[in-house]
Length: 276
Figure: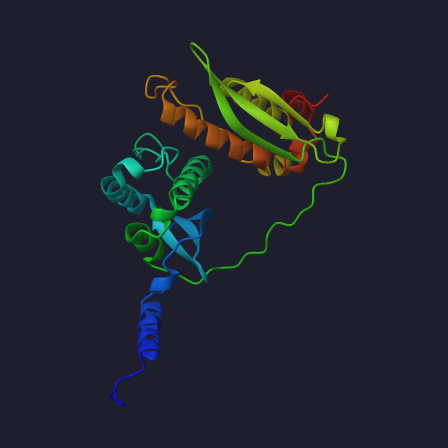
């Protein structure tokens, strides 16, 4: 063979380096392992969602505005058609006229739904390595800001150590959310239980909790953003996508609530969640 021709593997390494310098992972790494949206930032009055991406060998982050997600969603729908995962509910567009896009409640709601959306897509192997998905999640690639995990251990005497909403029950005119609760510190026979609640009941519990803390603004500030009510005139509350979005949002809210010291000590919360 011609000695002047570069060794095939070194040639491949060179293109790998080029791809890396352009902010794209090399071909063999073009597989998204996991994704999360830990937070959002307001830059020049616009909300940017911080998307953390774990590839096969490296991790990075990208900042994306909702409009970029919206564009990608259209491309995904066109390309994936029937293989598009059913649980990937895309949060609908909201007009700024009716809703502040920079309020903590709105940003948290959209963050949670966009994170769920991406996770459902990446969970499908063929989609996790599809060039549309990897392209979207590598464009504008930045170094990952490694934040220390909030490693706060729950105190030993808490009554609830985990919560989830795995299912819903659709009644004739309302929806019940199945809230599964765990206390890992209890004997196995008492460690798991479940309560069924309507959205309104969860919203009322939150309102009551906030009212009980009105004289303690510091404690009040530690609570997660309240679940948002939606007018029935504008939203079909029995629609599958609406129910699924609400389930995801309520689960996120309750998970954050039980990690808030003032909430996990509150009788309002404990009685509501069926702690005997």
